[in-house]
Length: 459
Image (cartoon, rainbow, N blue to C red; front, side, top):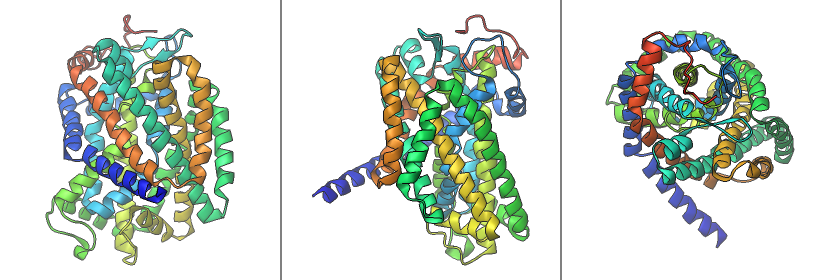
């Protein structure tokens, strides 16, 4: 009886996920990306300026954490299994061309990440204890007077966090260590729960401090590892890039009909996995951007947008070229499943590939748990106040252990639905306030006034 109920629930969630992440959602997200690119006059042109601002500090400005601390927490939550397994899934379902379309979501998604972060910082509020709170929930409630959508966003964020940001991530780590090192899942669960508990009890400052060290290490380690693997596959790298570009616009199957399915499938799965990976438009990253010390909202929004650049334009693209070149170099690789493709591709590259994959997944997953803990904590705080936070943290830690030892097929499907439900109210806010984004961008960015202090900004 229980198995039948689970089967029905699973079928319902999978159907709901397919609808929520179907063509209308992809059109809405991609459309917003393109629209905001025009509204900001191509803010992507300033991506290297954004990167340079990351290491600077507006020490006299109000806020809880530094520019880099906010970016580190954002990237901690964003850079995860989607950058590795997700790219593999896109290739198995949509062919090599999916890598190109995944990359394009990063290029255009920079504008949406910039816009949603700008309004989050501009309309942030100071709580009773002096800390900052901001994001789609504040914008929808206090600026657009859409209390229902604000609450809806908060509930969807909390649901998504416990799913994709907690239990499924813990399960991934536990399964990985059990398969590769024979470590029992309950041991992994206990250790992770303790480590995360110690970190989050210190609040956003403790969280940002850990992420400030963890995120650069994991990103640099993985990027260097991918570059080394590309050198190992050097005979096939240019062929792989050519295949990716060709199949992105080709209506015929490639690789002898064994991998791929034409342009439409490449676009569908490339867009879907790219959007899922960089989270541009979901409204998650702006929550931590609102806590940053900054002179004006445009300055912090630029920095926040660089997360999409690193996540998708660099990391996902590198992963895609590594995987496609590996398929060309090793024809016996099984590419019917994204996780299998990724594991076999890295495993073929001597002992180095397996080490890179294992360490990358461990650090990516752990950082995701940390980042999403903050997102859900702030949305819960906005709904119920700070009195709920101690209880929330206890439940968060317990769920890490549960996720490590449980079967979570239903949670994955549920999380996909929650992620889509987060995006809808957030995009409403972005589009409704696109005029504000355009004016602020013109005033501070295109008039070269990034160092000016916005006296109206809550500090």
